[in-house]
Amino acid sequence: MKYTIKKKYIENKEYIFDPIRKKYLINTPEEWIRQNFINYLHTEKGYPLSLMSTEKLIILNNQKTRADIVCYNKTGNAILVVECKAKKINLNNDVFDQAQNYNSILKSNYVIITNGEKTLCFFIKHKSIKLMKKIPDFSKIN
Image (cartoon, rainbow, N blue to C red; front, top):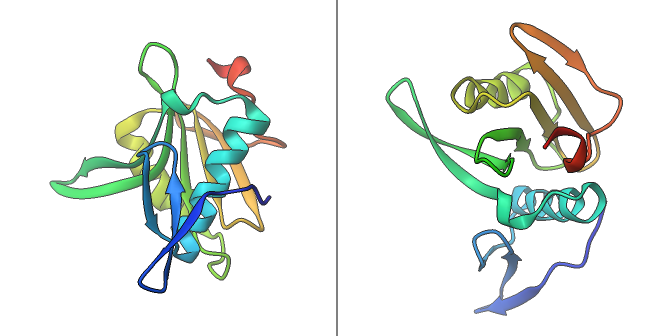
């Protein structure tokens, strides 16, 4: 998964463009994964950029935290929560729990965890969690 992402350099630091926030951000390993995954969701799965947010502020147990990517349906309900990690980070229960903690507030039916090399998508309904074979298209869950 690699897409063309707008880049620029300021004082020898590489910045990449976030089409959701409409600004350039320092290119970190996690930000690279996040921007590529946004492109994937939009290009391959049909999720409108206008119905996505990045670094979504969530208040969890009186603490501020941020979900990497949240996709919404046309009525403004969260339908997909994505936790992005750098390639060197293994996807494990801690990463899933982090995403699921965000989702306890957002109440989406889909949670995705990705490090760019491996991506896992889960369907969550009531207290049941099912590993999906593929990420659903926007048209299927909207």
